[in-house]
Length: 561
Image (cartoon, rainbow, N blue to C red; front, side):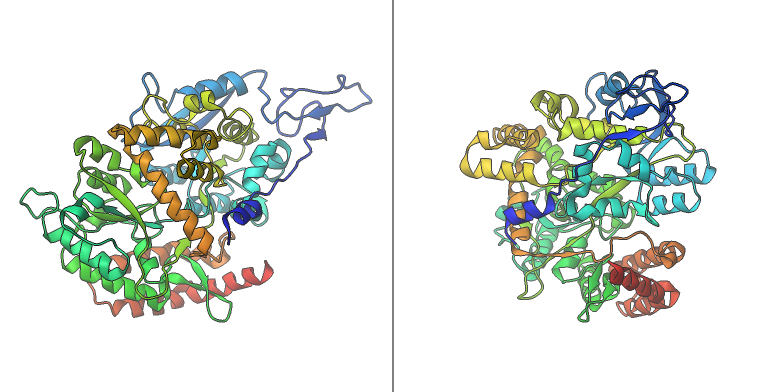
């Protein structure tokens, strides 16, 4: 599929009519806070209210939330996750006063939120994962946003969420009702581990070939482990590592599985056109056996089981690992810190190597990274839609110029300061157009082609990195990563997750248990605590403990699409 064709088919504009009739107190509790286009109502007439997607409340409203923070990120002077450029602007321009009840680092956020959910003392606004969303729907704890979204969403917001035939909103819905607004991503941009990142300076020092096959990968990984690539006369480096999720995160071994044509965690088509669960197929077993052998030879960090994303990033920044599966943003997950300490360090991305003569294909998740929900009973549920309208307006809409970008997205003086992380809600641009502009600009050596603020920022920080600014080193790596990404999409070297609906009834009851069993078995196999034959028992147990019924329900869903 050609790139232009992909862009044209994925950008779908949904035009919305913003005028509607309502009484003087609209049903969302605004009580006249929105602008009106008709005279005040009389005893015998109704007032026509025109909803402004970015309308400011007459009197500021309070909205409590909890925050997931990146403790490793430098914060701009005078700003915190509680009070910052985003919170100040939202209060000033929307009249929404964001109040943070608690915050937790990336690795602890989900656990702390689970405790909060169990207590029943919910904040007004929450960032949740898919399982937490389902639990909140089941307990009738969050607001139905279906009509509110239709009424309040701006054209830009609806355009972003319409990409890919509205899959992101479908994923955010249960039983035909919209319960969340998603943080979206491009399909390839949101993949778990679509690239293999390699320490190029170590390859050069040890005179190693580029990783074109799994055999090359294993040869390089062993050399990085055994041949002292950092030159300190100690055996303290590892050729390959991943975080304790094992699969489908941004620092997992999902890319390694893909190299074996295995797609754990995804529903893929079988030869009969039905959907089967990728974690239960023979290709996954073959990949696990290879990982088990690498672990036994000391190639994989033996402490991966206790290292979440944050600790894995620390390991990368310390210069103790030579290869990892990750995405285009990997350069900002440790390599820029390493570059400051070791200017000779160089990371380079490569396409996934293959186990055979067939090219490896990247497993693509549905393009939703996480969800934002509103507590049921909160007086102003429409506020969440206004927040998304505001974010899109500043990042990709009509206000998205350089000045706004420098103010809300990345610090112009220090590209490692990611201001967007301070926003109470956020969604990435669901299209890949900024990256295409950036690639075109670099290929043509023409800065004027980088029109989009994101493209311009990528251009500027890449030049800074090339000129030796280690603090923005990661920005230089976006170019080779996206060159590979566009090649992957152009050649169709990807496998889509075939199921993107809400949890089926049996998923709701059994998925947590099955997921725990899967992670435990996969981890034990990799560590050699059990034989590879344990995989066959896992498959049998998975089917018996609910997998068969889930598969039936997934395929019934597929037939209805």
